[in-house]
Image (cartoon, rainbow over all chains, first blue to last red; front, side):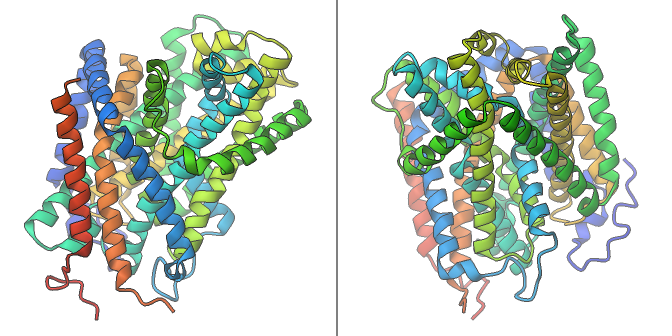
Length: 517
Length: 36
């Protein structure tokens, strides 16, 4: 690809010389594309075989590593809180006189939208109800609803955001304070290098990051497209629309996310994120007000207490002494989520680092960990609570929908609330905006990685990644093997537990040298 | 799953955690990054 203009309009002294070349001259990028492409083609040719092998390997890894994953994510949470409270909390992510680039509201909105947008819409009602279906076999139904909400909040709460926060913190600290490129492997080279071992480990970390991001976002595109398609079915009462509507949604999505790749990040991304969050927030408030408000608020208050009372202990729970059904549930939900967040950590971490220059470590940790967690509790309290209301109070057969069509659960619940047409349309709009936001952010981060840490990757590089992400999403849609892809993401991201911990050691070693006032 | 695979996976975890401690406490200032 002719890319001679890649280096135009970038006078920043931080611009690496190598980024002046074509992005596709990078061996790192070529290898990442090769690995991703082989997995995509394999999934297209033999989805069942890929699914079986990936599933088996993930089961082995999860069985042996469960204790370590839970210990690691709990350690990350406690460490990030300690960093915020300690004397290091005053250290700025940047030079001492740097000021934040974005307003606090816009900053929080951007990092949250980039992290979990589509997933929240997808699982808002479905996840609590899915847990409920299992728990009610062991506990009283009324008690089961509370436990199901707690488990959902645990999966989306402090631990998830601690993984993002620590990864982002390392990238931001090293990038803005020590001047290293915004790459996953850069802190490793900075602290332990320059030597061959450090460079190799750093290079491998970057490769893993690119592959994990590309596959993860590809899966997210497919998941989002399926949900939007289900929403359109529900909105217009369509049946058997099948692949034609799915492909139409996919094409419209592609046409929507390319223009923001051309607009500068600080304007295009901020506007998209704010629009997505405003739509989702408005939807949540509407359901809260128009629905059984006292029931939902009661559930939220109870969820807050149960979450903050139990989250610290639950972070260490490995369900070792439970039966096989619970053990399988633990693997397919809790462990999958934790590894899923780790897979997304290089993407979200680098992105939130990019938008957090000038903030202190304390501000960063509190903002990144607590605010999105609070929003998640509210979100699941409203949408999960609405699902429980329909199940426990109105005795609607939602559990059947949960078992037959997970992506349609939210729409089924909304159809039993006031103004179903409006709320379903808003879910579709928010889901659409969240996918666009995710793809645009991912194209930016991948562009940054492939140009060895350039904070302003060229439009051509970002567009190239947009095409690749779209292609991956398409392959996953066509192959219909999202479950297999999830298993591959889990496999591909497991090494990241080690990478993130290595990055944490880099951060702690660097902080030891700081002398905060 | 065979016990051997399980043992090897966990051995790898123990070695990695040991490596992390070693990296944390080892002084690399001789190579670079010496700010003081």
